[in-house]
Image (tube, rainbow, N blue to C red; front, side, top):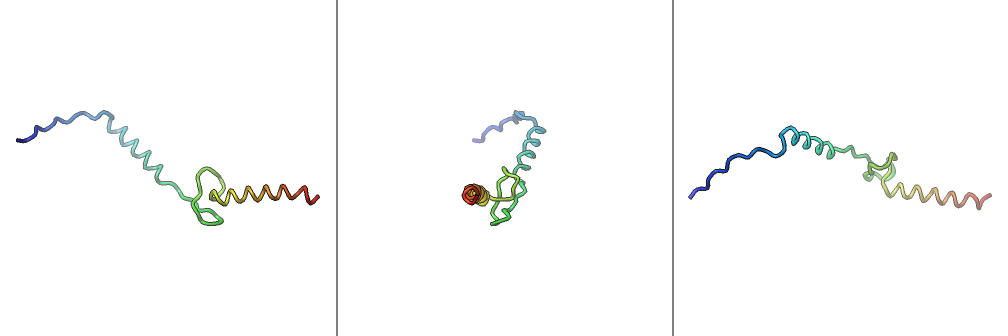
Length: 74
């Protein structure tokens, strides 16, 4: 016994909208990866600094240390 062939159903989403959605998703994948200027690791896109999260954290903790030492020297 052979199965009956199903009639082709009309697409629910128009082809133009599908193509536009595919293009918008593919541009998200092509991100320009920026390397950290200190250690060379990948940076996140959240900051304008070219630092990875570890180097950024070290930088802020170093600033805190300097701010705490300044009043002690005066």
